[in-house]
Image (cartoon, rainbow, N blue to C red; front, side, top):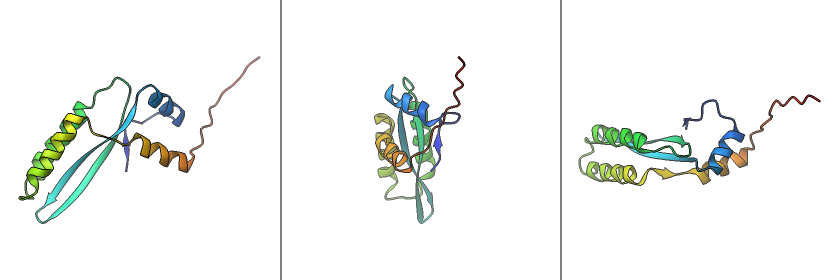
Length: 115
């Protein structure tokens, strides 16, 4: 999955922002194609002091507009989407950091020391 809102950030900067209160949030949504349903989710990096409402509202409207064809389950998916809208999404920061720690990305800053 692609992580949104991390463009131009190094792992060091992401770790600093997480220590200041940043987090990785997932907003699940359902797309229905008549009989088949496709569960999807987007990962967003939420910086410290940034709200999640704009991302949650977008996914709520996606659920309302695209999952209505799954008749018996549509109200359940829409209610679940509304729940995550009010909650602020699913916090997946620990899971993503464990995965990154397992992969051990290398951070090599270009520091030039002049004496």
